[in-house]
Image 1 (cartoon, rainbow, N blue to C red):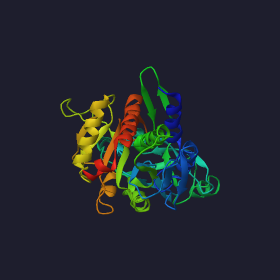
Image 2 (image 1 turned 135 degrees about the vertical axis):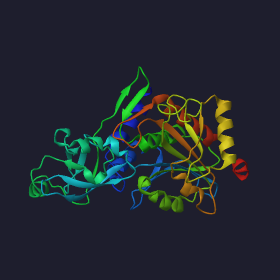
Image 3 (image 1 turned 90 degrees about the vertical axis):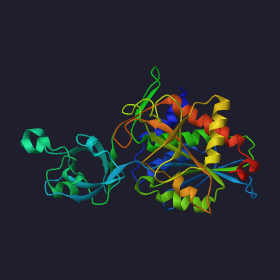
Image 4 (image 1 turned 135 degrees about the horizontal axis):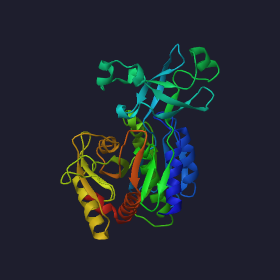
Length: 359
C-alpha cells in the first residue's frame, strides 16, 4: 500500500458529508487537490478541479466525476423523550441500522455522538420479535437527552440537521484490506484525485476537469449542474461499486474484491457507450490491468446523467468493488483502488480526438 494514497482515502472516508451537507468533504478535497491546479466550487457544493496543464483553447474536455456525498440521515423531529426521529438520505440497508453509532450535527455545527435505537428485545412481544420487517419510522437516534427541551437546549439538536455513521477508517496492509464508512463514493473521490495527481506535468490531447459532485445518493442532483458547467466531450465516472462475491454464484459474480475495477456495461439508469467500453477493456487487457465487466439489473449512477447531457456524451463507469455498501461499515481492497487509478491514468493518456470521434 502506498502510504500517501491510503492517507488520501482515510481523510475522505472519515469526513462528515451526507447528501446536501458535503462541506467537510469538499474542504478536505480542496487541500488534497491543491497542487493539481485551479479549484472552484458552486452553491450545490460541487467541486471543480482544473489541471494546471489545461489549455482552455477549445480542444476536447475529459471530465472525471465522483460523488462526494455519503448515505446519511436528516432529523425530522424531536420526540418528547428527547430521541430524534429521522428520514434517510439515500438508500440505506435498513437492517444494518439498529445499534449503529452515528454523529449528529447540531445547530452550532458540533457533531454529537448518538445511537440508532429500537425497542430493546427484552421489551418485545413474541410477535414483535418475529417481525423483522420494521420501518425506518420505527427507529430513532438517541443522543442521551431525557426530554425534547434538553435535546434542543442543552444538546443543540434541531430539525433539518444531518447525521452520518461514526465509523472510522482502518487499513490492514498485510491483508490488503481497507475498512471505513462512505466508500460509496469516497474511495472513488480518492481515485479521482490520485489520478489527477499522477497526471501532473503530462501533456495530454484533452483538457481534464475533475468534479466531486454532490447529492448523488438522492437523485444524481449535483452532476446535473456540473455537467452543464464543464461541458465535457467524454467522461469517466468513478464509483464505489457494490461487491457481489459473498452472496452470488461464482459464475455470476462481476464485482469481486481483489479482481480489479468494475466496468459497468449497463444498469437500470444507463447503457454505457459500447465503443468507449470496448476501448477501455482492450486498453486494460493490453496493459495487464485486471478489470471486471458487469451487467446489472438494478443500480444507478452519475454516468446516466452525463450520458444524456449535451446531445449525448460517451461515458464509462469505473467502480472500486466495496462490500457492505450503503451500510455503516464498508470493506475494500487497496489493489482494486490502485488498479482503478492505473486504468484512469491509462485512458487519459490514450484518448485522442480521433479515438473520441469513433465513439
